[in-house]
Amino acid sequence: MVVIDSITAQDRLLRRRKQLIAVGLITTGGVSGVHIIRKILRDALQEQLKICSSVDALEGKGGTFGGRRRSRSVKVAVDGVFARRLFNILRICVPNPVSPEAGLIFAQTVCLVARTFLTDVASQIEGGVGRYVGVCLQKDNP
Image: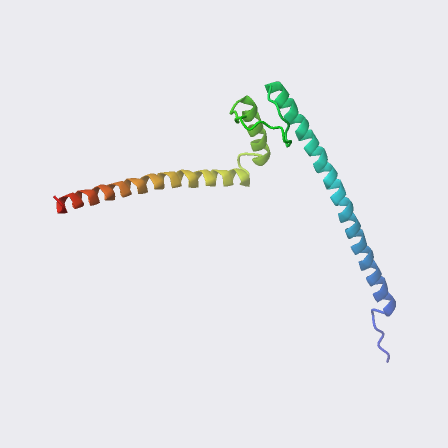
């Protein structure tokens, strides 16, 4: 009785050809994807430049965003424009109050407040130790 190999040489060649075609398609798609992403990023940068130049024009500030003419004496103002931009960023970063992102921000806030209180307690202890050492040194050296 002759045992026939289930995968013939022709099947192996077909499988290899399919693999090469798949690799070629993935590579071509990746290259074209890079061009698409690059175009999207370029368009987003142009939109940001337009927005910043219009805000500068409204506020009467000179200079260009990302350019060399930006005045060094311009201070950042915490005003309505800043609050609106911050709110828009937070709305993107934290989609809803029960999201994992909101939990992370809450945990970081708790850690920051706890660190502040621990720093306060540690400074009070160090101050007490310093006063005690000062009193002891005064008693030893009249």
